[in-house]
Amino acid sequence: MKIGIIKDFKGQHQILVDACTDLGVNFEIVDIISNNWIENVRNSNCDGFIIKPPGRRDVWKRMYDEKLYFINKSMGYQIYPSYEEIFLYENKRVMSYWLKMHCINAPRTWVFYDK
Image (cartoon, rainbow, N blue to C red; front, side, top):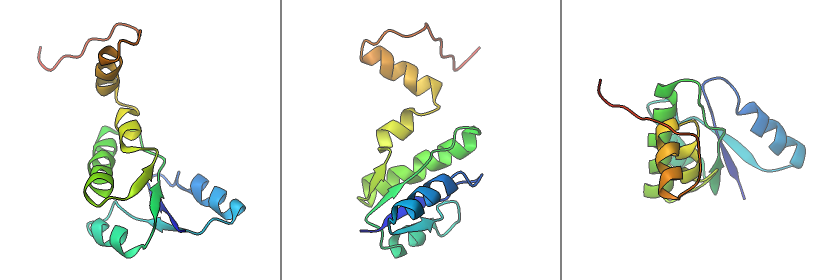
């Protein structure tokens, strides 16, 4: 078994590299930031991918959400955390919708798309 560690912008994937190294887990760092990210995923021969999703910049979050969707849903690779968990992570709008749909008490939240 080989785990793919998804590279991030700030090097936080190093935590996952260190954990795999300490545990003796076979891994490869896979770059999905580059323009040839699909080939990087396909050529990695990984059984699944693990990621520490970014949350600091909205543009990074959107890029990861989009590409992880295709890695998981279209290419069929397992990812951890799951796509659904990553989609909720650091996304106030999506989280507020999800909590309301599941009747989970949360602080009142207003989402506006116009003035």
